[in-house]
Length: 202
Image 1: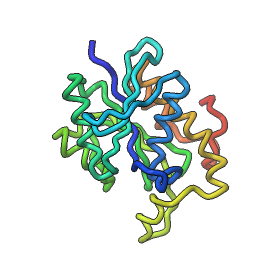
Image 2: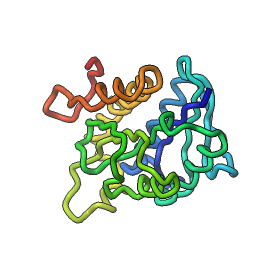
Image 3: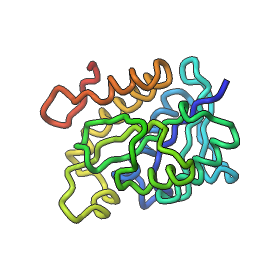
């Protein structure tokens, strides 16, 4: 049976660590850590790959090392090599149009201006794959690059662990119960009017 592939999008290198644009990397790193999986650099896939069991599912976790706007290269290489079905692919990435603390899972939707998703669409030649978007919003108009490549504020940093825990839950639901259940979980707005998601009992 085909493996599952979870891909976190981000930029490699120390200078990009803990930036909003790298929240996809942060999420899949936490996922791997929780399940005792370890990343290894795989030059033939242009990325770092972790592989093992998450629940009952044989799962690979990929961090492309191509920089964001070329992420699709690594995704396509792994997909083709392991003959992974599109229904078993989940891309995890940031989204500046969603407030911090909110998540969205969609399938068959466009890249929405995100260069990483544009690259994935270009290399897979389809939009028929699931993507989990992590809100990093509240940017000032006209400051997109500075916002996504900037680090979270001290106040935001306090919220990030709860957000990442909810992302991990959403991924685990997707693996265990499928896209519809994952969407029902992730696309529900937090009950609080603020983006704080310390409570994961939705």
